[in-house]
Length: 603
Image (cartoon, rainbow, N blue to C red; front, side, top):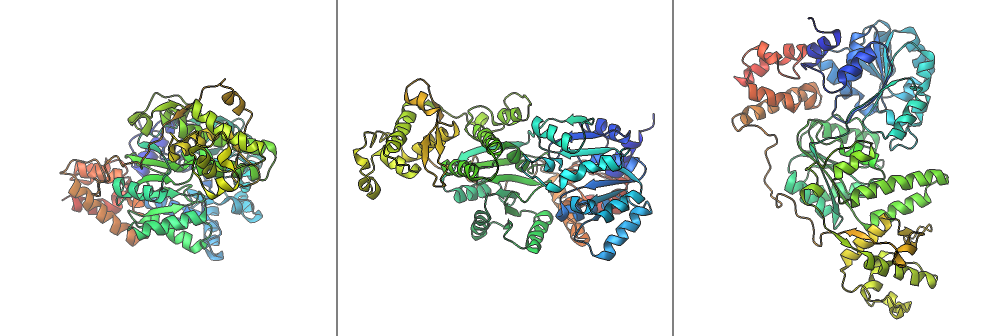
C-alpha cells in the first residue's frame, strides 16, 4: 500500500519514518480543510503540523509568527530541507520584500512567514487576496490571551482571517495554555468550531528543582560549574539590572554569558541571540522577553533567579530546555523577598479588581508549586488539567522534604504583626525577625519594641528559618503585603483562625545551609550524550564537521543536523547512501547535499 501524501512528505523532506503522538491526526485534519487548535509541549513537533499540510495542499502556507528575530533561522532551516520558504517583516528593504511578493504571486513559495503587524497592512492583505493560500498557521497562539504571559495586541485582529478567507483552514498552535486560556484563544481567533488537539504537557526528560534563595548568584554559579559546565543554558531574571549584573558576574567567573534585555539596543540583542543559537556552551541571561520560538535543541538547563509570575510562564520558559529529549534541568531559586515583591507589584498594578485578582491567583498557583511537599510534576501538570503519578525525576521525589507543625511559630509571627498594628506600626521581614529573636538594635530601642510581649519569643528559631516561616505565611495568605509600596506586613482575614488556635499550620522545612549540587560540585565536564565509548569519537568528529558546515552557511548548527541524528549515525556507522538515508532526520535534500561528506567522516 503506497504512503499517504503526508507520510511521503514526512519521509522524503524531513527524513522521519513515522509521525509522533497526534501529529498524524492533526496533519490529516488540516490537510482535509479543517480548523485546529493545537496544544503541544515545546519540542513536541508542532511545526510539522502546519508545514506538512502546507506542502501537501495547493498554494502557500501563510505562517503568522511574532518572532521577527527568528524568521531568518526558520526559513534557513526549511531551505536546507529543500522547502521553498520566505518571510515578510520589517528587517527587509523594499527590493527584498518585492522579490518575496513576486515569488508568492508566482506560486513559487511553499511557506511564507509574516509578522502580525505586517499581515494587517492593506498592502499585505491585498497581496494575499491575489495569491493562492493553502492554510493559515497562527504560531504562539497564547499571544492572543490578555491573561497570558506574552500578550500581543496585534493578535486580537487575526479573527479577520476567517472572515476574508472562510474556505482556508486555520491552525493555531501553542505550547502552553490552561483550559481557560484555550477557550480564550478559540474565542478571540474565531476558532469556536475548530477541533482541539491537546497533547500531554509532560516533559519527562526535564528535572525540576526549586531551592531557597541564599546568595543566588553564587548558587547559580555552583549549578553551572557543578552540573552544567560547558552547556548551553538560559537564566531568567525579572529586571534588566538583575539580568545585566548576573551576566557580568558569570563572565567574571569564567562563564561565557550574554545579557538580553530591553535596555540593550536591538542590534546588540540580535547579535547576542545569534551567538546563543549558533555557538555551543553559551549561557543567555535574560528577561522573559527572550526565548519564545527559540528552536535550539541542546539547551541543557533553564534557571530562574527570580520567582516567575505564573505557572504558565514558568512552564513555557522551562520548556526551552531539553528539546532534543536528552536530560535537562529546570532550576528555580526563590525566597521571602520574591513573594513580597510580587504581592506588591500586584497591588500597584494598573487595572481593575478583576485583573488584580487574576494576577493574585496566578501567583498563588506559582507559590503552591514552590511550597508543595508532593511531586513537582504532579502539581505542575494538574495546573493544566492533567493527572500523572509521581515522576521520580524532581527534587521532591528524589529528596522528599520534611514538613513540621508550624502552628506555634505562625502564632508568634502573627502576634508580632498584630502588636505592631495596635501601635499603628507596620514593618518588613528584617525588623519583625529581630523582634521575634529578641535582637536589640537601634530601631528596637528607638521604638520601644523591646517592651513588646512578643520580643524574644522566637529565639529558638534561626533567622533563616523565620524567613521561611514568613514566606510560607505569605504564600498561604495568612500575611499580606501592605498596599503602600513599602513591603511591610499586615494580617489577613485568615489570620484570625490561626491566632485563636482553630487552624493547624504545617510548614515545609528549608535546608539550613546552602544547597549542595547533586554531583558534589564536581568540576569535570560530564559526557554530553549517553553513547557507548566506541561511538563517542565519531560523534565528536561529526559535530565538528557540522560546525564547519553551519559556519560556512551562516546558520545554527542544528539547522544542518540535530544531535539526535548525529548520535544515530555514530551508532549505526552507515557505509552507503541507502543506509544513511534510513537515519532519522536525513531527508532527500540533506542526503544529496551532505551524504558523501558524512560517509567520508564515518570511514
